Length: 194
View (cartoon, rainbow, N blue to C red):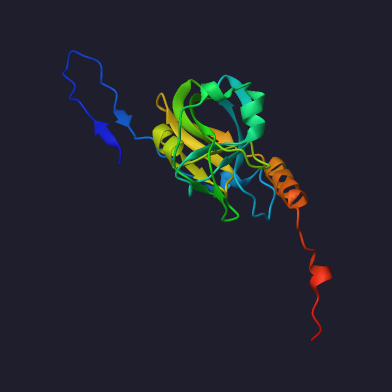
């Protein structure tokens, strides 16, 4: 909805201009798909500035309730066990396994000029991603994300800013995860006689 402000002119003054104020709209259009590789079913994987460093392979997951940090990022940031605070709840991995976290750490995520403090749960399990950002970060930054458009959009200082996903990186993460599975079974080795 737009707000239109009109004012009357008197005979001794110049006409006043009409000022239209429109709220920011966070959304996507067909133009947002122009640079995506079609067709696809890729996860939304982005690069974010975490703890002062540009971090690649960050999964944006609207379905997760907590932000996760994996060993590659933990080591890359030179974090030590004494940097962590206790986190006593167990987590369930993508594979359905129970994971005991090493602890929790609060780090800033910077997007443009906006900085949001995020509590990462540090886990010591393999992932092709370095981190997962989830609903707490999405809500704090007022993000709207889309795997279809491979973008994250958020309001900042009266403008809509965006972070573009990296489909090539998302596909590399999938391949790395498949190759890492210790007991991966190929479809040809489990053929059944019909």
